[in-house]
Length: 222
Image (cartoon, rainbow, N blue to C red; front, side, top):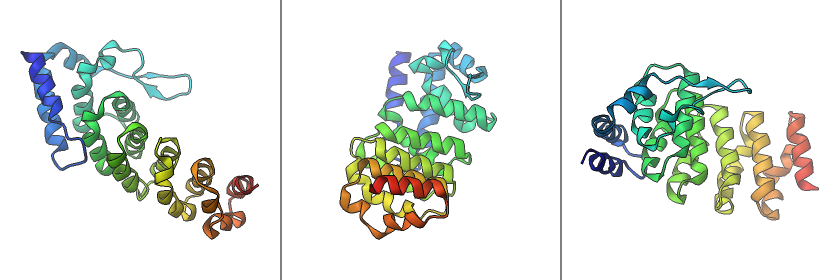
């Protein structure tokens, strides 16, 4: 019965961004805590490990890998007081959950104060359904953080419907951040038709102040 209540609570999570996403998370957390108190307690105190690359990840903790722990992980991410590095590791776990969590991921993408968490939520758009993914990408491409914008530009090129999303990338060619412009050139080179690469906005980057952008543009136009 307890497991059934948890499943029902998870089904209540929104499939698109909404003001109710956090409230629905709290409902799923309450149901999960009742069904799996020991698991949720373990998630609350779990600590990530440092990888060889120097980043923190939850990659060897069986509790954090249990699908039933997802509400606890999400609840800790939203309501906990962990450092940005730990919150990023928590956010990474949400990349591996099903579409019932899309609403929460989109909500975090637009409201979380951490650039690292928002960028991680952008990464989740790679496999999201077309409509919510486009909603998230549009928001991310206008994010105040160049890190988030760059991730959004990169994700577009990795989606199966990338060709339909090419128009979203054109403004990124004029982004104030050179890393974003560079990624825009690379993403368009990978997925855009020749007529897009012939646009003046693309060719103008042959005179970009960043030599990396110039080099990538020249290569794309060869």
